[in-house]
Structures are given as C-alpha cells and as structure tokens.
Image (cartoon, rainbow, N blue to C red):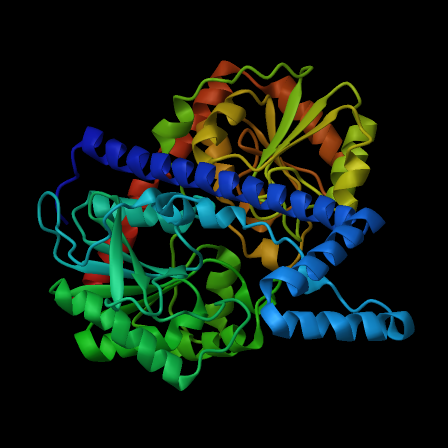
Amino acid sequence: MQPDPDRNAAAYNLRYAVRLHEIEDARRQAVDELDASQRQFEDALTGFRNRRSWQLFLLARKLYSHSFLEGWAGRRELLRFFGTAPFKGIPTLAKYDLVPPKIEAFLPKPLASPYFSDSPNQRAIRTGDLAPYDLVILPVFGFNYRFQRPQHLAVQFASYGHRVFWISPNTFLDSDSPHSFEITPLCANLWEVRLREVIPDIYTEVMSAEQVTGLANCVSDCLRRNNLQRSCVLVQFPFWRQIGLELRKRFGSLLAFDCMDEWQTFPRVGDFARTEQPLLLREADLLIVTARALENEFRAAQFDPLRIPNGVDFDLFREATAGDASYKRPVVGYAGAIADWFDFDLLEALARARPQYSFVVVGAFERERHVSGPAVERLRRFSNIHLLGHKPFAEVPSFLAGFDVCTIPFVVNRVTEATNPVKMYEYLAAGKPTVSTPLAEVSALGPPYAYIGATASEFAGQIDRALAEDSPSKREQRAAFASSNSWTDRYKMFDAAIRSKMK
C-alpha cells in the first residue's frame, strides 16, 4: 500500500470538496427560491387575468391588432368578429395576452448549472504521486446530493493519488454538444463526468440496450481520452450493472459492487433495478456490504461479501464548536434525512413525555428548506420541537456540537435493519451519546456509545439515562471509538480488497 498522503493535504482535499458541495447547496437554494418566486408570481398573475378589467384590456388589444396591425386580413377578421360575437360570444383572447419571461432566462449560465464550472474540459491531470489504478464510480446519486459514504470514499481515493471519475447520473450536456462528455474538478484527483447521453432515472426507470450502448460509448470516450489503464469500476446501485460489465469488457477493469442498502425492499426502487441486483451479485469481481444483515443474507445465498461499514471524518466533527442557537436545555437532536423510515409518532410521543427537553431536527425530505407534510405539521404544534430543515453538510458538525444527546428515531424494518448509519459515527465523533430504536448495527455497540429504546417510554428513559451518565471521560471514550472508524480506515479496507483482486 502506498504511504499515507500528507495529513494537511488530505484534510484540504476533503474541505475543498465539502466547501464546493456547500456552494452548490447555496446555488440550488437560490434556484429553488427563484422557482418558488416564479410560481407565486404566476399564481398572482392568474388571479389578475381572471378579472373582468383584464379581459376588457385583452379585447381592446384584439380590436387594435385587427384594426391597425394586421392589414386587410385583420379588418376582415374584425368584421367577422362583429358579425358573430352577438350570437357566439367573444372567442378566446389568449393570443393577445401578455406573457412575461421566465426568470430562468435571465440566470447567468454558471448559476444555472452545478459547481459553477467556467471551463469544463476533457482531460483529468493527476495531482501528486501516482496510484496504481484509477477509480470509475457509477454512483447511487449525484455528487451534489447529501454528503455521505459515496462522496467520502471518492475524496479518500483521490487523496491517496487515484484518479477518480464520478459519472453524473443527473447532470448532462446539451444534446447538440460537440463533445460526448465534459469533466469538472471536485477536488484534487476527483472529477465529475457529465455525459451527452441522458441517463434514465436510475431508481425507477428501465435502461434499454440502445441506451447501454450510448452511455457506455460516452463513458469510454472519456476514459480513453484520459488514458485509462489499470482501473476499478465501482458500482453503487444495481441500475448500472450493464454499464459496469461493458466497461470491464472494454478496459479489463475490476468490477466492484458496493451494496450499501437493502435495495430489494428500499422505498421507490423500481423493478428494473431490483432485477439487476441478483445478476450483479453473481457477476461482480468484488462484493462489499455495509451491514451485518446484508453480509449474512448474501453469505446464505453462497456469495462472499466483504463488510466495510461506514465511517466518519473525525477531525471535521471533533473540532466543531456549537453555533449560536439557544434552545432550552437539554437539547435532544437528530441530524440526517427525514425519509420513509423516520418515526414521526415516536418523536411526537417524546415531545409529550419530556416537555422540558428541546427536540431539534436538522434535515428534511430530500433537500427541502422547510420540512413539510401531514406528519410534520402535527409536530409543529409542539413548542419544544424545532424543525430546522435541510442544512449543508459543512454546517452539520456545529449543530451536533450543540446537542446534549443525539438520536436515531427510525422505524425498525428490513431497510433499517440492514443500515449502518453514518450519523452514528458522526454523533460519536462529536462525543455525544446516541439513543436509538433497536437497529442491529446500533444495538451492537451498547453504552456508553448507544442506548436502545424499543418503545416511546423506553426511548425517553434512555435519553434520561444518557444525560445522567454522560461525563468527560465517556465523551473521550466515544471520540476514541469514532477515531478508529474513520473514512481513511474504510478507504484502506477498500484499497486492500481491490488490490487483492487485481493480482
């Protein structure tokens, strides 16, 4: 294995990627707010157009246009109008309406596309010492999505000198672009690859044979132009199976499948992706899983998975200081996605049972700024529940620093039983005790790291216990555990497994 990169350089690489991610988050927020303003404007305009005065204005425009702008053809139309209007009524006046331009038409081009790249190019120039292979990532989401395992691993590989090509599943070139691809730097040695060929929705749609060929050709153009030689194709979602196989055939790449969730029962995953997974399990050269449940499931099916759990960027969370928010203490917090498995009923019961505690939720459905939905609206009735919405990953450590206890309030089902929560490691890196429902991966830790409550009353009691037992020594104990589960450690496990298969 190559020597570790300079600690400061590796930290800079991560912070550069995280900062870029934060800037992209701000760009998306600006565009979302512009879209919302456009919708509000159009709603107001619709109400205005429905007024009788506006219809009279449009009628006047029609009469003026026929009389003075359209020549004799307009005058003949005007005579027909006067002849038929008393019997058939006034025809639609939409043709004469005023249509304001869309806000998007006035956006500067960098603001309209991710990462503000002024000059996407076609060449990936490696920085620093050479690593023995390149990494091509067929990801589970775009790099600009929540900063999680896929982005952390990509940055780690890049920090160790591998060229990393992240194939974007949701950002594309114009169909008339003279190039089949463009690449945009995300940090040293890591590039996002945008293809001219549009990729179907990887979660719900089907990929045809023609699309496989077109996409494989675009990716291959990128990799050949960048002189790809020894390489690993890392598939993070089974939708990509056929592209991964095609790249292995064309470049002799190692094909690895990082199965990070129970995709067969995962919400909103379509039949195509579900049927591709059993094939990919058989065809991959290397199978990696995150959780014991997945490891046991695949071993029972005669596969040979390597379990590499999630991890944490320890320094980022350990060094953070609390923000300025002044909630009544103790503060019981959650930071992460609000998805199908979030237990709203549990949070409501906790707020009722412990009115003296502040419950702070950092996160939302997808990337909503303001959490919404019927289940959420019930929570807004509680003065001790604070729903902060989505926050950029760069801000999450400071929120954790301000929590007294961190929680994982998930419904227990097949999806969550097969989850190795990233937030668990982030909570512990901040020195905070974690109170969770009985998820297998969390329950395995036990106090002082994790306190488990199966019911609302048990959960509330475990929050009380975690608060009562907390101490500087226990916070140091949790931090020490997190420091031994860093993303650098996870990278080294990946790297060793890939190298062993390449021999």
